[in-house]
Length: 59
Image: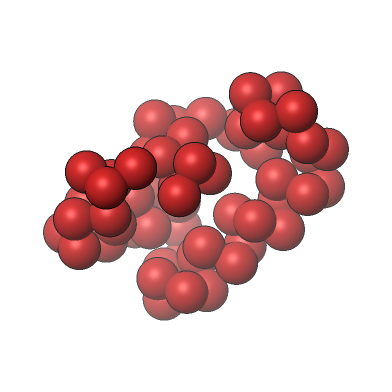
């Protein structure tokens, strides 16, 4: 949920990694998994889908 929130803020993988004290590769894997779970092709689409589902309010 933290990664999804940061994606919705428009952060890059490097910025997500720095914010969460993880490697950029780990951030990339998390973002890829989020895109797959939300059936989204882009970060913007994932953020919009998460907003529609109310996932960002829960974070």
